[in-house]
Length: 349
Image (cartoon, rainbow, N blue to C red; front, side, top):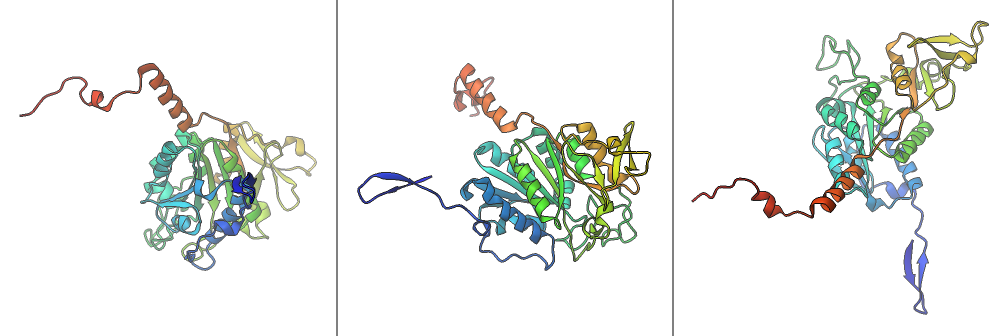
């Protein structure tokens, strides 16, 4: 609420105008290739931002290097375009210095998981209260089509003309293994789902990691088409929802059951199995999240989308503030001069 002075001199509260998606669009020309999936991600973020009821001057988007990292230019908020791979570290420092700010990270699979990999895993481990959105097109787009940490084995690119020899990272299992407290996946071609996942990530207290399947129509067109096209999407995707059975297929007649720790696909209408055999998803189970996150590693299994894991853990910047306050109460405010001259000192003449 703002205040305004009336004609008789009294001060009354004036309602702030409600922000819209247009309020979050900057005056910069958006310079992605026509047809790039980044346009959809930008649109969904701008559409969902007003629902958070936060002032734009309290919002910061931090990016590294890559196509995705142009994001701060197109948001009419504060922004920071960092160096390659360091977006997570910059965002962490900002959140520790200004915990009152709403901090977001936008990065690509190359920027975040290659040169930025170490910064990424430790940001998840610390659990600062920020949102990390990783645009995964399985390629280096800005530098013209080299293979990335998520490119599939055997991928032929400009930097792997005979096919890659490396196995790709699974971003979800990497995030889970790093101690992430919120791990989710969505895609550029499912705007409603993306808005829902972004809102849930923002509502989480702690580091929210959101992997977004994004199409690079210039250097890796169709990398995710099994999960986006009407004819193939039902049998190749499974939408994970807390408290609901893991069903997929055009008729929702296929399900995932566990045989020990190994997942199996069943038909709930085959006369042998029923919906009672299907896993009912629990987003607080890290063990289950790990199994479901690896479904794509099994032949003919669908790829999961949704919130795979969500748990409340202590938030780093809050613990840091408590530690500083407690130390001052016990030891006093301290003196930089005393610190510099503590212990043995020498005077050089």
